Image (cartoon, rainbow, N blue to C red; front, side, top):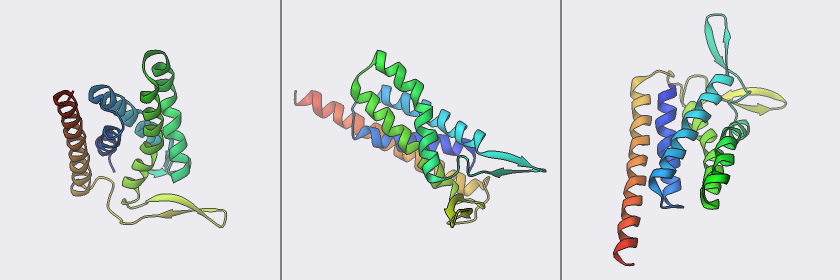
Length: 169
């Protein structure tokens, strides 16, 4: 998938999951956006290499366990900043976002032509659930639409919690 597709999908997914755990919408959406952009950039930048005139994925970042590690690694500076600036709940949610962002990247990439890597008998093999081109506009558009819908659902959940809390307090 295209990088902007990964950004929107991850932002929507992280925001939706975070909306069920914490009701500070603006802070959480900003942090989710920062994590989405940095982690997806790191995974794609470090996980692609040029072979001749083609760009190929590598198992350096495009495996499920390694994507979790790279996602957590990108959240370390945010966690350090939040340690001095914010609450413990926000730090825990940032760690959760770091764990989720890598697998969300792999979820989208498993539907592309080359898929992602997994190890069988000590050798890296690729697995793909579908073989769509990475730049297929319909598939990218569907993933972006799903990300936007998840973001709207998160905003609706924040809005509902805010008004419910203030109405009955």
